[in-house]
Image (cartoon, rainbow, N blue to C red; front, side, top):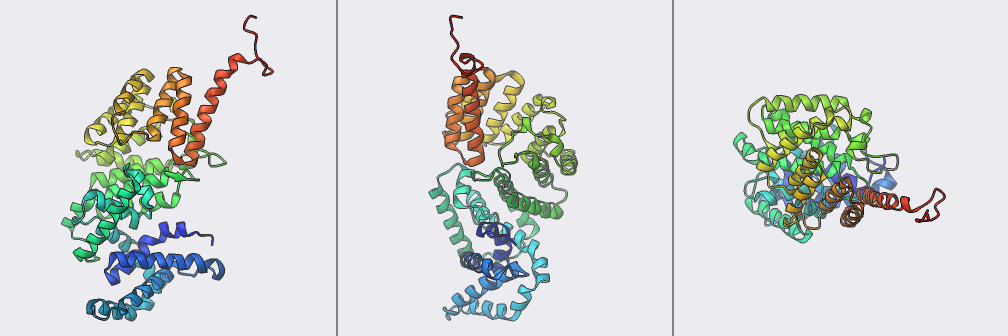
Length: 429
């Protein structure tokens, strides 16, 4: 079984951390213990082989580290009691059946616990992305458009607050779940986005992240089947993920939406997503995830790129823009307006975004401007902005795509000056 420490962190950390938290109640110490267990697995499993129950193995190792720590502080009688309780059911935790049973509950409990109201919402979301999503501090900082050091401080403070609050590791009451639902959904949204379009690294997509976000969204939807925004978020994930196979070429290169082979799209996922968003919109209350899902459905239901209903998409983004202060929503609205009214209208709107410090220097602002300049026929300026976008992104597939776009435009500008054999054409005839 092929694995890496990175894969283990993302796939097993929330399950293992949840199980250890359930028994010991100390978030920061449990996270440290789980990290040690993952490191031990990365060192031992390549030589010894992956155990039949890797989750149980990791829980056992993490709990043993916790036990050692707790035993070193005999004055803390409550924690000593937790140690003895662990010893009594240690073998049950390692059993495959119990691992399967606790998997979903522990992940969901951890998700809700990290979104506790004792934390500010940005801090709660950052902590949850780290603990449940397995995202690095740098990845979370990029999602929030803030410096990495700022995000590291938020996560550290969140751990301290959780520890001081004595929050029990149990599923919150219905009322508490309702209070935390907004943060929970936003976490799942960000985890899915990082999985579907990785902000850094060699791969365009991290399927383990997007799959885990979909799995947890399904679990939340199962518990709250009548909540329209829960259904909207799950629909958005399904409708977006349905295009996954068509987004990359044979060598992992990015293929933009307009150029994708739509026969590769997952029609079952599209049908499920359309049904979910249609039902949720009929309930009267319309939220941001439902609007984004409706936009995704319009894209997915178009047989060809040129059949896309851009006026409707532009109208939906306008509604979404009124609900949200998200600069990426404004940027997407710009693209939709340009597809309806032409590139010059889009360029005029792009100019209004330059004062938004969250977008200043962001590669997507450069990329959108470059695309609109190319549409307008200003290839020289488009090349400059494609290059600027390529230099600003940390995603290698995105960088390669943007660099290729700039190179192709540069070559096209040279063609009128070259003869068929590549020699310079005499301008005098």
